[in-house]
Structures are given as structure tokens and as C-alpha cells.
Length: 249
Image (cartoon, rainbow, N blue to C red):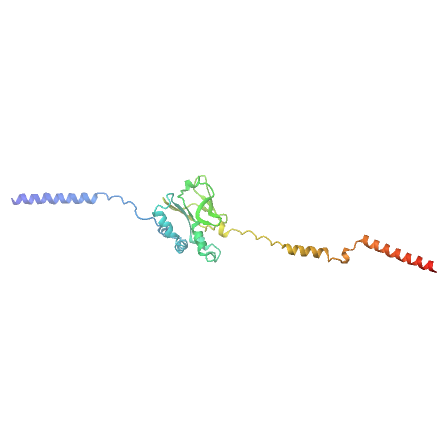
């Protein structure tokens, strides 16, 4: 009896050992990435976007974009051009500080497209491409061209042109591309048209015309013909007086 119990114990122990080994060798289930999209986390992982992140936060565009990404606000997705810290360092000193809060918002939104684009899909996009920014004259736009191999694209704002060949993250609904220049919008940084010269008032024109014509009754109004007629009249008067004097004598 004791031998039987000992044998059962051995068999049970062996079974448990086999089960433990099988469980240890079983592959772990694949982990599907989950959780909300976070553009700030993507930029922080890139490690060279400190200034752009700060600008996103001060204008609250990070919160707005993350909300839109995770609430299906735009089913077409989004594309962001992220300027590096060097891009901001190369700006003229005081450029950002010269902008109002509203203009800073427009600057950030000018780096975001309301459409998800891969390098390949940019090739068939129609220019100009609308950004998230807008002003009194309508949306801010970009012109984007790609090389035949789709290995590089050029982005133009009308003020700056930058080549793009590095994608920081391309996973729908958000694509993020690195740019080494800040995309200064034409609407904020383009050359302003010169102001029109002021026109003279009608009263001023009339006064100038009167001055050029000369005062009424001045010597300028006497013509050569008038002078000759006056001379002839004086001559006839003198002759008549002389004749009368001669007759009397």
C-alpha cells in the first residue's frame, strides 16, 4: 500500500513538472499597442523638438490635436511637419516674441495638415495644400512636390523652401515629418505691399490751379494785342488835340 502511494506521488510530481515546463515554453500572446495618440510623446521620443513642443503647449495645440486624433474629429487623419530645435535657432532673434498669441497659434497650425499623407500620397496631392491655419484671406497653404522615387519632398510656404526626407512617425491617423526650417507662413512673414501715395484733395487742386493762373486783373491777363490797341488809341487822341490847337491858332 505504501509502495502504491509512493508511486502515485511520483506520477503526480512528474505530471506537475511537465505541466510547468509546457506553460513556461508557451509563447506569450502578442501585445497590441493601445492607448490614445499623443503627438507630444512622439516628438519627445525624437529628442530634438523641445522648442516646438513648448510652442505646441503654450498655444494649446497639442491638446487640441490629441483630442481630434482620439475622438475621430477628422476621419482623414493629420500630417505634421515638426521643426527641429536647430530650425528655431536659425530664426532671426526675436521672431517668435514678435508674434501675438493668435499669430503663434497660426504659426503652429501652419505646420499641420488636416489629412494623413505618406510620402507616396504626397505625389498625387493637388497644390496648394490647405493647412489648419487660416486668416482674413482664407486658409494658409503649402506647395509640396516630391521626387520621382518618393525619397524626398520639397515644402514651400512662399517664404521658405525646405527639403523633407525623414519621417519621424507614419502610423494612421498621424504622420510626423522632420523639417530643418520653420515653415514661416506667407501670410505672416511675406513682403507687405507698399501703401498707396495719398491723393490731393479737390480744394487743394483748385487752389493750385488758381495760383498758376495768376490773380484776376493782374498784368498776366494783358495780352500783346491789348497793348497794341491801347497804344493806337493814345496816338489818335494826341493827333486830334494837335489838329484842334492848330485850327484855333
